Amino acid sequence: MNIDQFDSFVEDLLGEKLERPLIIVGASKIDDLLLSILSKLLFIPKKNDEDDLLKGDNPLSTFSSRIKLVYRLGIIDEGLLKVLEQVRKLRNLCAHSIEFNINRSPVREHISELKKLTINRQSFILTRTRFFQNPFKSNEDLQCIFITICVILESIHEAVIKTTGNTKTLKISNK
Image 1 (cartoon, rainbow, N blue to C red):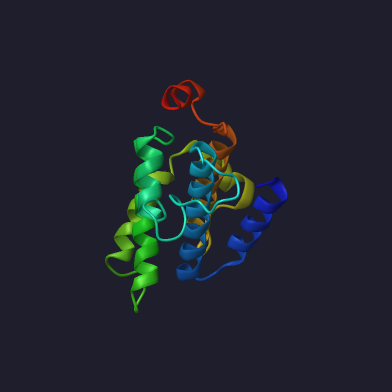
Image 2: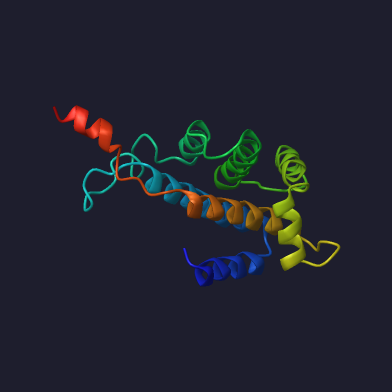
């Protein structure tokens, strides 16, 4: 994703004033970033084939499995794992609950935990300084959290080197 695309996403997220769509859109972007990281990291044998591991109704096509895999591969630390798990829980509450209120349990507790896990991160402080004024208004704390997570994941995506497979083991398996 280039800087213009990312800035466009941030503008869209900043324009969202309701909590439920904000969480769903933010979580969707995070899921897309996880897919992009894994697609870059995992060897895909044929260039034109649909990914039979990461997309569709396949083992690593869920938000939960992608979160767990990037952690187990050592791409993210335990702190970011906990943040992503809270996002996933919130997203599921948004998507699968008829009533959704950020001031009621269990949503309130998940948002509180998400805030605890993110507000002291340097990236959160930098995001807050760039996009928001003190004090936060309305949903700006949630917007800042989602932007922060996306900035972190986009940075990770940029740091991941696209794999072409392990040539040494591919040669061995070809014998």
